[in-house]
Amino acid sequence: MTTSRTIDILERLIAFPTVSRDSNLALIDYVRSLLAPLGARLTLVHNEAGTKANLHAVLGPQGGGGVLLSGHTDVVPVEGQAWTSDPFTLTARQDRLLGRGTCDMKGFLASVLVAAEQAAGRRLARPLHLAFSYDEEIGCVGVRGLIERLVGSADLPALCIIGEPTLLETVVAHKGKLAARVTCRGRECHSSHAPEGLNAIHLAADMVGEMRAMQDELAAGPRDGDYAVAFTTVHVGTIHGGTALNIVPNGCTLDMEIRNLPGDDPARLMDRLFDKAAELTRQAQARFPGTGVEIDIVNAYPGLETQPEAEVVAMVRRLNGAGPLRKIAFGTEGGLFHQRLGIATVVCGPGDIRDAHKPDEYVSRDQLARCDAMLARLVDEIAA
Image (tube, rainbow, N blue to C red; front, side, top):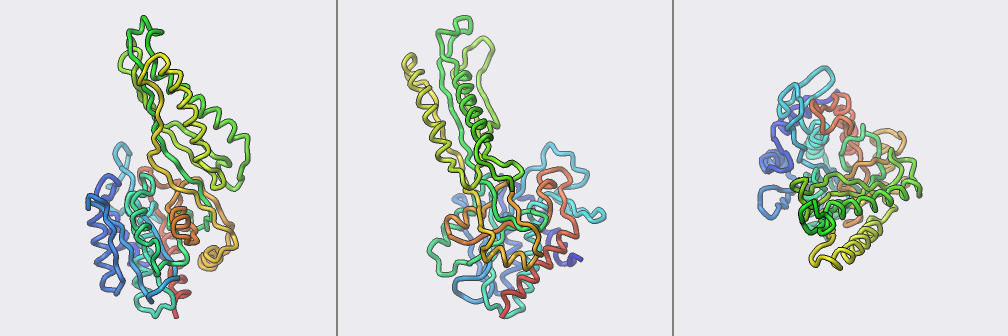
């Protein structure tokens, strides 16, 4: 069964309303208060405004190697969701523990902190690293500062477990993501004389048409059947333009994303969209100087593809059982740890991603108990 200590810590973590738009410093201070008495070596990496922080903690010997347990402290908003209990108060219902972030991913963080307490009472042969990051939910933003601090460090961990909810199955790969904003500038006029203007929404529609053609080609091209969606996707999420029906609109913006298989280069796909934007701009400016289409990349993170024979995969399968290896459609900071630092990484944590981001989000007691057991075995493995 899950230890009462894990649930006690989870209750405290849930009580911090660390929605990505808000500070996580109170939660980080609480985590520091648990880790500092254990003798952990603590490093904070703040955002530019000083309102949020990553926490990197190390237990055990100095030097490289060891295992990193990584998770994010931020959660998604609760507004507009029909919760049946206070989302920031841990609520128990049979086997379920409800609260915003229980599944994604404070349940894992609670288990990690219990494992740290266990490790502090042991002589470790390899270091245990903990990473608590901010702003993962808006594009794996915060952890980048921590990663940059570790570049060139002599104390890099060798292996990493990202504790996103996977039902504790071992995930070796996930898609990457690129988000961009397309800005279309037209020339307004009275709609009764529409041909005398340049409709910015029509420019946006031309860009969407190019994306749909690209999506058709991707769906028909190489696939990886281990993913629920077996191909790279191109998606338009929002579009805004126009002010009144009788005005030819002079502006339109759309937000789009690419979720790419690790083997697909999103830059190649974006080059095609940049070329289309340049073509439309040339045509538009022949009649109306200053019009056209611009694309700004807002955020991107790489996919993850860890080889099944990697040491980290073998280790996690020893810890949680030799079940099937999985690939997931959602992203994590795992690709960043591997790409920037060369740390072999898998994703494995308690809970089901389908229960995340919903009202009455929950993690089961059984999943937490299994995570506690997995991390206890990890402590045994790295102990001298």
